[in-house]
Length: 298
Image 1: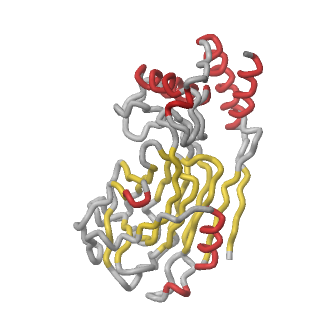
Image 2: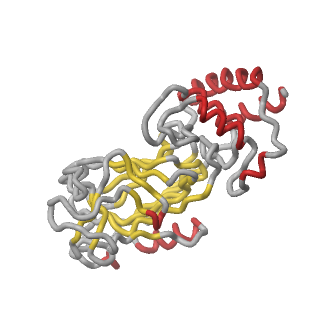
Image 3: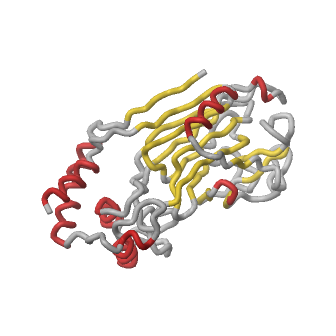
């Protein structure tokens, strides 16, 4: 049992460092990113939605984008219709058109049961760069990307506004700041690669293990949307989420419920030890342990 606990703590301590690789620049950078992501690239170009022109509100609200398996909360964005600045077609994601208003910030999350490991987009705003901040399931900032302001004026072949990342750290959500430039922000051709995970994989590391129990225990009693340890989906962390974790213990990404049949759930005394050790690890991480990061730039 000591060996089992030690392995968990070593994992939590981040001894195996992870990469957050950033791509930024022109279409050549987008191609490099797509090849490195190693997957058929799900793309949302927003052309199927009803948009609005200028700084007005109305049209479709984007509470969810099923084509790329993401949702937005708690503020919902909309669609801007202006072919002069779109990277493809005429329509783009906008922070204001859904009714949220000028300078509004948004949060993009994967659908329940998925994790993000790659994301890319084209900034269409001529007034300022568009950053996006990627966070893990414990609300720690993993890395930031930024699309350069749009200076191509309807000539996408000369744009340098692409930004993307590939992360070996599971990304739980991406924050999209809205106070850039004049506050009327818009981007196009959003591409997100997600992976299926178990409903009880609270820290999104691809396996239901004792580390998920630590996250559950540390957030017990919290309520709200988007909580990583809300396994039963009732918008609060309670005993039901422990039951979900216990029922799925041992599952790995894409393995299905049957994978937990031969996995032994740690005994209560061992779980207490794990929580205490994780607290020590958390303190040490706050003192400066950071993931490695790489930049690919034009």
